[in-house]
Length: 120
Image (cartoon, rainbow, N blue to C red; front, side, top):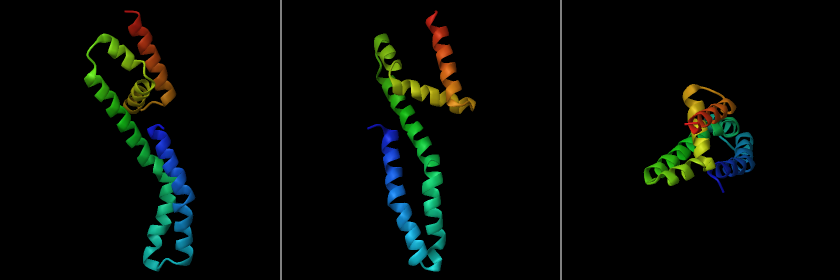
């Protein structure tokens, strides 16, 4: 299971357990001092979770790629590493983030760059 899939499973699990329980507790049992927490918790889980999880996933992907690059010894290993899907996704993420581009444009830029470099 990929890292993004694990985060998605965690989000769905929280959506089905944490959110209903916190809303129930807010409506029926929470004292006035806990209202802010039990209002914020479901709102964050529904709308803010991916704002935190997305950058964490991207950071882990980039770290894995750089770790693999450190271990490359031959040109064949480098080409094999570059052909892995997670390496390409990390490159697309980096291009999109650094240049504030949508991901589909970053994929296009990467394809154009590969085409230009393969001619040499």
